[in-house]
Image (cartoon, rainbow, N blue to C red; front, side):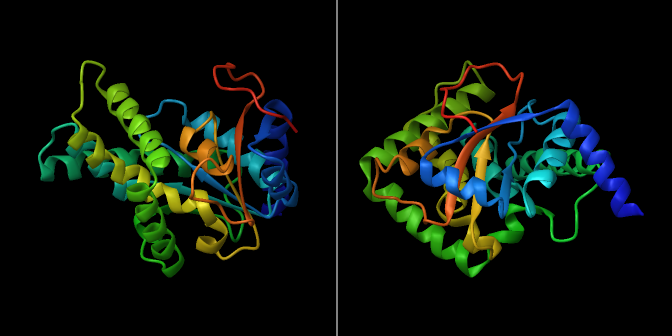
Length: 250
């Protein structure tokens, strides 16, 4: 009976709030069409990820995919606050508080739309980063950021923009931008093969707007390439403001 109620609640959310899917490439479209697994990356400090939006999104994803996993990037956020000039203990405290708020928001959103199914999950990144597959991918990503000028330039630009978004009057030094890049590095393994991290046959990652680093990787503009089992897409509500680059829609 509980399962029937959960499906009814998800169906109600879905009927009111359809989402648009824009795969990065035809290969990404194939991964999406398999509907095997999806990774939901949520960003601390981003007002987009409210409880109602998360409820709508998670309800829809549970209708679409066999397995849904949400990842809250807790361990990398401390580097953002260190880059902004916070001392070590205060940076760790602020990062912990912010990611706890986001984690709890995800849980409330999922409960509001019927709750996760067996096999679905909400994870702190710190719980995943000790895995063998994650560590292997992390080493590969770290080497690529050091060796590939195109990849590094895109990453630095993204990190600089992120720091300025948190503090508009702030003009970070190169050292501060490189410090904050540890946050981005921690997320990169999911771009390459979240299928390995979650031990599934194929996996789709997504965000609600274009991610320049994912753009470079999936367009094969750098030496860092995603697995053939990995896809990426822009997914947003149908009525979401069109301020991102348009892509083919399904």
